[in-house]
Amino acid sequence: MSSLPSVCIIGAGSSGIAGAKVLADHGIPFDCFECSDEIGGNWAFGNANGMSSAYSSLHINTSRERMEYSDFPMPKEWPDFCHHSLIKQYFNDYVDHFGIRERITFSTAAERAERGADGVWEVALSNGDVRSYDAVVVANGHHWDPRWPEPAFPGADAFAGRQMHSHQYVDTEGFDGKRVVVLGMGNSAMDIAVEVSLVTEATFLAARRGAWIIPNYLLGKPSDQLPVNPRIPFKVRQRWIHELVRRVVGKPSDFGLPDPDHIFGEAHPTISNYILARVAHGEVVPKPNIAALEGSSVRFVDGSVEDVDVVVYCTGYKIAFPFFDPAFISAPDNDLPLYRRVFHPDVDNVFFLSLLQPLGATMPLAEAQAHWVARFLRGEYHLPPAADVRADMERERQRMFKRYVPSKRHTMQVDFDDYLFELRRELRRGGERARRAGFALPVAPRARSVVSA
Ligand SMILES: Cc1cc2nc3c(=O)[nH]c(=O)nc-3n(C[C@H](O)[C@H](O)[C@H](O)COP(=O)(O)OP(=O)(O)OC[C@H]3O[C@@H](n4cnc5c(N)ncnc54)[C@H](O)[C@@H]3O)c2cc1C
Ligand SMILES: NC(=O)c1ccc[n+]([C@@H]2O[C@H](COP(=O)([O-])OP(=O)(O)OC[C@H]3O[C@@H](n4cnc5c(N)ncnc54)[C@H](OP(=O)(O)O)[C@@H]3O)[C@@H](O)[C@H]2O)c1
Image 1: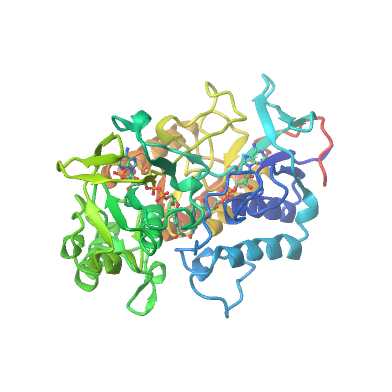
Image 2: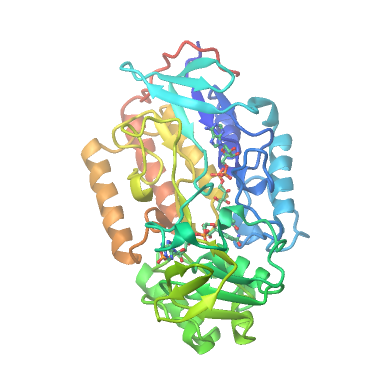
């Protein structure tokens, strides 16, 4: 038995592989189970697990330099906003470079993860094995379980056309000459509306709320690389970026789109170089929300009616943990309160990677979170007292819910630079707490399963 706790990592997408690499660096014994036959999760287009939401034309909308892991840069000659195939290649290069591929058990799903009274986890795998671990790292992704409109629109069950979710969208095949409604104002809606509008007879972009749409570049730099100093109060930075977007891009209503009911930074960012031009060209026609589906027509809340062949719901995703008993750990309405989006307040040996929505990319955050977890499991970081953890969680939640427009997509928002800044600060504080406690292990190594070392 190792002198350090053993870990089960669930998933080998961009978060799980970062977790595996970091735990390996810290000498923590672990197994990593991946239900697919390859790594990369969402970025493995056409993934055999059926869970990837990538479409054929998908490019990253967070820039290459913001997305790369701290110790493995993407090739400088790659475009700032690469195609998904390069991103998948990058993740494969990463696991091979650091010798992580051999540490992943492929085509093996974690089907059930149960924590016993002694705190040891029992993990039942799709190959029939049941193994025990001292800790579980959850990296199963949160963009694979489609959220359809809730409740469904009146008449949806009798609609004569096709209804699909953006998760199912691959390319424009089947859209030629059709009349299509794309619903939503997030990034899926932008990409899909733009793309199908190249082949459809008519494309309508319906939304219940407007969004500030920012281009990939602002002031000659990738928009997510604009200087952001976490020491400058957020309100000041927000006002600056809001004014920049309003002056450089204009108001959505300048293009015929609904104006947002909020200022920039109060909703997850919508990034598109093309949508405003397609609207300006009349190739994408803005509409308010859908009121009802009526035979082969769609009626919108402003009373207008259009003949429609296909409705594409770009209405986001649900957080799901099919391996947990929902009474124990679940995220109703996408809400799972965690300490700094990693630690569960009641369960000291379950950790989450990338269970957040950053204004920025997820990969460096997952990597930093994994370092945090590793330091905790090694006894080099101790959490604040339970009451302080709860108070911090409550404060953060109140701040987030106050800032963001109410939506199931805004339950775990973080600001990229601020998050990393705070995490580093907390690591220093928790390191001091650990030192005072003699670097005692917060999670005892007790599980009996042999874990690949
Ligand atoms: C269309 C789209 C575009 C996006 N673009 C960007 C972008 O440009 N930049 C950005 O930062 N983020 C983007 N995102 C967010 C996206 O979630 C992250 O980029 C990234 O995929 C998160 O990685 P992950 O490893 O957490 O999850 P995933 O990529 O979903 O990987 C999860 C992995 O866990 C495995 N798994 C799941 N359940 C089990 C189980 N029970 N047992 C074993 N294995 C399991 C899956 O097979 C998968 O390999 C985008 C999301 C979508 C939908
Ligand atoms: N790299 C890329 O280019 C790219 C492409 C696609 C997606 N992504 C990422 O993937 C993630 C998911 O994006 P997403 O666009 O699929 O989902 P999303 O960000 O959750 O957006 C969902 C949209 O649907 C709307 N909506 C939800 N339910 C609705 C309903 N019942 N009626 C009307 N409108 C409804 C939401 O409006 P409200 O705001 O009012 O809730 C929102 O506009 C995000 O992190 C995104 O950045 C990235």
